Image 1 (cartoon, one colour):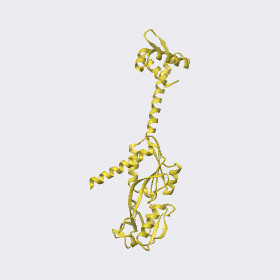
Image 2: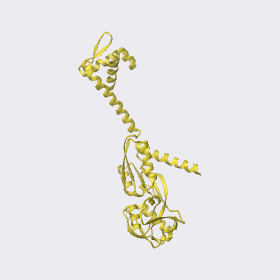
Image 3: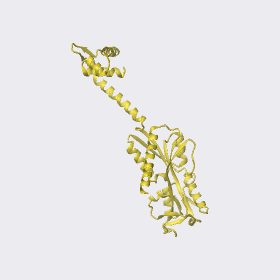
Image 4: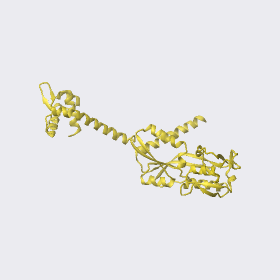
Length: 305
């Protein structure tokens, strides 16, 4: 049984007349009659009684009528669902992020904008370090990932700039320099640094060490912290000092102060990574949201100038 046979059957059943049904369908009356006869032969039952003024449904026809409407509705829904999936409006998007990226307000703002634009797409979120997220991308376990690539590029990966985020010094509140509004990094020479281990966050770790070297000293690596929130906690406990992305200053832990870096620009790059080979509409839609947000920010910056 083909869908066109169901449509022909419904047209005849609703019109009660083959000629009027043929006009409604835009086909000739003889071909329509032949199609109805073919459907009856295929099903092995008579669907219509022929009368002098048209046709009426048999019991078999009445039974088919309700199911035929449902079948057509289901077919139309299947087409609609396929079209929505093809446009990236349904399904699931697997999104990764580093712990430090999660604190940047651009990340939740972009996720919120995507969810508002595509409410039919479910989001699966995975936290990991940059190396893990890149591996997950390559394996297909992630579609996109917010990460800190430094100045590097990666084979098979497209990077979309989100922000060059400035860094801040974080000090224990009782530190002799804690009252300063701005400090040169050189002022931290000889201090013990609380950092995330390089294997956990290689890019951020290297950026901090590189900034210290640029300021003229080799940082003394002290207590390690498993994640950024732990860095702040350990600084509060006076295990040492640290440097963190400015967005981490949202962590208003008791016993720490955040101080601007003076005399040099210390920034960390936040980017969104995707597979170059990814042709998914869902991925393309998320990237379109990112581009739209960035272009809106650019317009706002121009307007404010």
